[in-house]
Amino acid sequence: GESVPQLRFKGFDGEWEKKKLGDISKISTGDKDTKDKDDEGLYPFFVCSKKVEKINSYSFDGEAILMAGSGSIAKCIHYINGKFDYQQRVYKISNSKENLKFIYFYLQSETVKKYLLTFSQESVINNLKLSMLTNCNTPSPSLQEQEKIAHFFSKMDDEINLQEKKIDSLKAVSYTHLRAHETGAY
Image (cartoon, rainbow, N blue to C red):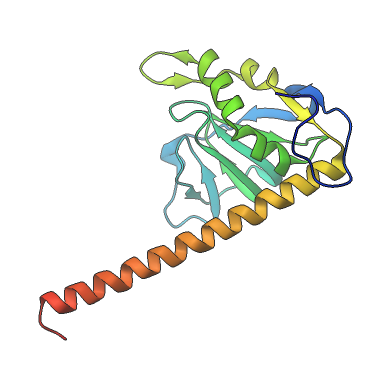
């Protein structure tokens, strides 16, 4: 929330502007329903869950952030650069004047999660309104600093994913050894 962050990469200084997300990017929802998914589909299909489904059509080809508009709002955020389709309750943030990867990481921050959950319409499940996204204040350092920050967090995500795959692999090997030991196959 600071206009001059305490931690910066070397060579960057000055204040960060605040810009409304709706002023720096285009935000829209899809027109598909979850029933349109096809397990054998060619393209990613974003619905209101962390799991990315498949579909045989695409409505957008490019860089975008997809955010669930109901249910797991502020927790279900995806970044993609390519062909995809998206459900009617999913918001697509694209055509940004800023670095979309930087915005993607910012939207995952606790600050944004608290903002969205505070103002979400709560019935049986939380619902995110378009005005909440368009009015969401987003930090706007220089594009060079955005790129540096986005690259840093992308590398961290890659390392986390690599470590999770190693853990899953070790668990599978351990399970196989345990089963072999239990059945006397050793």
